[in-house]
Length: 308
Image 1 (cartoon, rainbow, N blue to C red):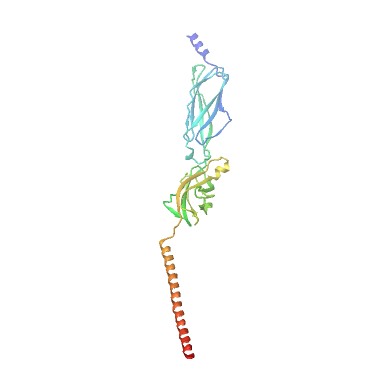
Image 2 (image 1 turned 60 degrees about the vertical axis):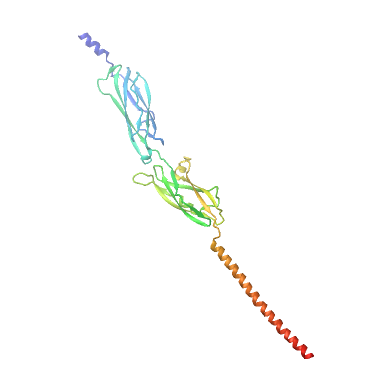
């Protein structure tokens, strides 16, 4: 019995020599930015300073309800400093205000030393933060006009602008184009510039409706026109994101007004009136001339009789 006990005790590792540590590759209390898709990678290490190998397991406390890829339990040999990567994913970044932070933690526990199960709990935890990225952008939608407009008139057009990001933003650089009908223009397109719209968070609607005026000059021919409206995000431009502007397209028919029947009748009436007046002048002039000739004939006849 004393021999068995002696052998059992001597087989246990000497825990007074060495130790173990964990840490982030980028230092303590790291802050990791999620990307626009809600993904992030966190690198950490486990250093085994014991004279025997250690078997460790991992446990994670995620932030923002992220999904994390489970790391398998592993063995770290004596003196090794092994690196690991924890992947966070599937965070819905549009549900949170830009730059919001939440803590996450990584816990590493020793399960055995040199093949012998750990007789007591031995674990270490490190914590960091995940940060929500700032998402910029707008969506725009022009109201359907439901009909045509006449040349020489203007038409009110409602534009719905929606903030599809997660922070306050300003509209910028509105542009209007109609390649098929270059004479069309929007006189007050500046109404769409520098409009402040908050993200649809914390009870905000995230959208505004802005009215603009479409003008078709009197010289515009009858034609089907394709209208395109573009709008950029000031925040995106300021951040240097080079994001494509939001745009929407609709079709519109412009009609050239024709001469109405009423105008034609008026012109015919005026023409008939002028003709009648001409007839009267001619009629009045003829009897006057004949009367004069009659008087002169009588006078001439009288003179001739007296001479005889």
